Image (cartoon, rainbow over all chains, first blue to last red; front, side, top):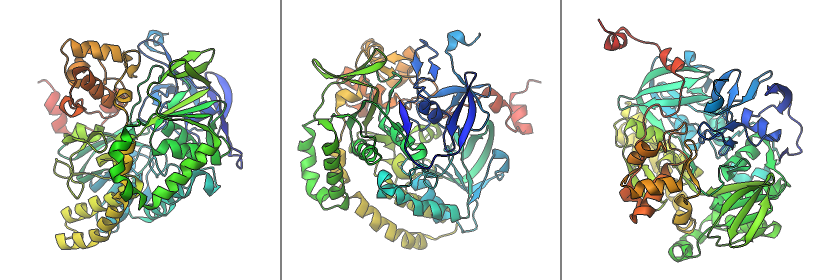
Length: 98
Length: 474
């Protein structure tokens, strides 16, 4: 798990994660918000379907890929979290047609 | 600085385009600004600072002791950048650069292609991959990732946290977590004992630097708070009952909630290589780096590489190298003559020499062990395409002797990260399998788009009549 260190709490930002209403904080990227919520895995790989989570948090590894507002393959670590965003786990190729 | 929000706000053309807003990019912009030349800074992150000064100005941890003085020193440069007369587009991914200095950039799911007269690549460094069995498991991330979370969001891992690998960043992050009240549990230090042999002759020069004392104090502080296992020579991670079991020697293991890996940093090569800039093996940093001259100019006219992207030397050196590339750009753009350029460069060169002292010691001491650079058979070498060390070694034995042939055999390096996470691993694994030096193996070819963009975005690019005629059948 991760925790937010005791600082003056940042303004909360509401968004949807796989259809559930959740909250992140101002200054979060999508990947950071998911980790703070305890979601260490955010996608399944295209090849084997293995679960993956953010590895580099700097736009390099592409393991934080998520679906944001209907658009897939977004790098969660580079996208600032916004109020009302719809974020979904990205499923691998074998589930892409569903 | 004029902060732009989308590619529609860009000018038709720029005299100088700087890619990256870390220390090198910000310093280059500051140096080049205010000379009646159109300067643009493109950066992928939501705000300036790069990795070292990530979220400078918005970091939620306001107690300066947590992130430390070296971090907060970036505020002065960020302020100077904010005051500089340049255009700045954050959240912008540069996916194309060629020898005609045409730049393809995407922001907010829209792309533009624009010409530049000079380009400075200040795309920095990335962490050297550490391909272990289990390094793809959720819960395993890089130390740099942990530090990015600490700087930008004030988030720290909790529970049983293991840091494994080597290099100054690993110790710095441990100290920052301790200062934040979130001490890790264990450090598995992988620096080979034999590295001291090569490092010792550089020790006197290192001890004369201000960061020797700081570094030693920091390591002592870390050792007081947590257990450090030195000279770890083997490592593997397995998922076990919802946790991570880290094994480092026969029968020696620790169950962790998080494992953070690190073994130094290497230059980001993708844009320079996609443009066609030459690279060469850098023995000091044990990696490939773009070939540059004393002004940072690459092998292609008009393109320069500044900062750690041209070879690892640290943040202060990066800013100075950014200034030098900017001065040469101003000369090429007719603002300065050679004498004027050299006069303005002199103090930066003197400072650069000071900041370079002691570097050789750190390079030699923290040179990663070859067996942690090559992928063992049971580790994922290419994370995107899920190609294991065993597959690489089999293909190398079957006669796929170089990284480009391996791509054709296995697709390694052809996933969305475009070889960023596996390029060094593939070279090192082939070298180990064939018993030759990585220099002889070479590095995989990298091409446009340097980062993936959607076909829709590509198709929506503005087209000229000539573009249309080039592909239309009559």
